[in-house]
Length: 142
Image (cartoon, rainbow, N blue to C red; front, top):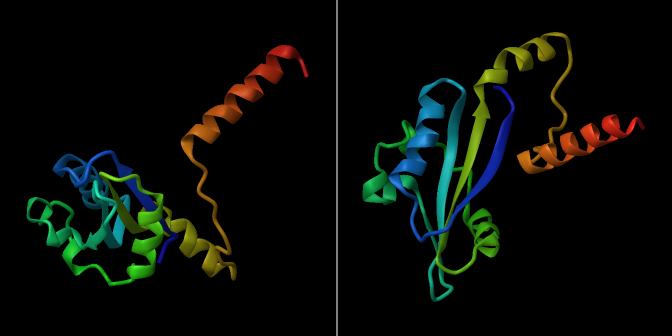
């Protein structure tokens, strides 16, 4: 198995749109990732939090291939933690993915006796900020 990652994707409405689910589905069918498990968490306008599988939402059934066959690894504790991140009237998709694109590297590392011991997801905005700072230092000659 390749490296895996748990993501919490948030959206500014109370339901996951078909377009958002299709974007995840394209990655899955493209062979870049495998959806191991997913869970939708909604914080309703009144503050109540609910959660359910993608297949529980009629408009999302079948949009992400194999989402219904996913292993039940994301649980109520994860849903509660994600709900705490949400503003009323918003939704999150918690998704556990395997990075299939990294499978060959993971296999090679294991064959050499190594293992992937850790990984850190760095948000794109942090990378962009670091690139701007590095360019500014280069321009300043430091």
